[in-house]
Image 1 (cartoon, rainbow, N blue to C red):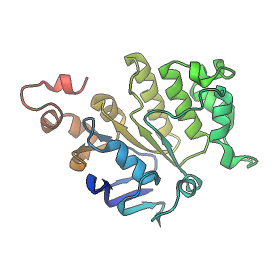
Image 2 (tube, one colour):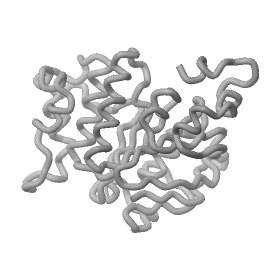
Image 3 (cartoon, rainbow, N blue to C red):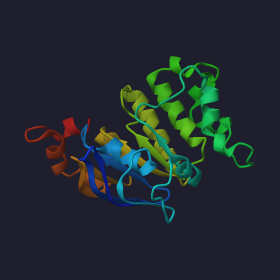
Length: 241
């Protein structure tokens, strides 16, 4: 579904992502893990067209080239950004409706009820302003808004950021359920344990380059990840907590 080949991104001549290549197949969860500042968010933004990059991004067999963001959304790509970027003065319901704007009037457009079934808390808060929600509720809303566009590829940037452990567990359980619908998921995370436990495969991004790739279970058991994250003398349990 998604093929990234030799993708590089630079800010003012300084490289942030270097020759990154990977694939995401339909119905699979692929995670990109790595420390803060490794270039994970930059990578997602380049795939989505928010940032320019050199290399190839193919989606469902089509080279996206320099196509704008709106074309990528129409093709079936959705990005949930790290900061969620909700419309704080608008209600939960109206934020969701904006997410499905491109599909308005289509008979197979996703309904609010579909999102509320995934996130019952949003149904309870449907008339509440987005800016008054808790951190976990805002993440649910950001994901629900992206899903209203009926993406075949959902990209998530640090969905666990700033959330309590119980909420993180709920969010990741929902991500795992989405895979069962055939949705492909590209998950960027610092929480290695949570990401690898639901992913099919993973890639470690360090200083803008992929330094390790493989089956998620094998990565979780690989002692080299400890060194990449924390250096010598730190336990694997500390890394994966």
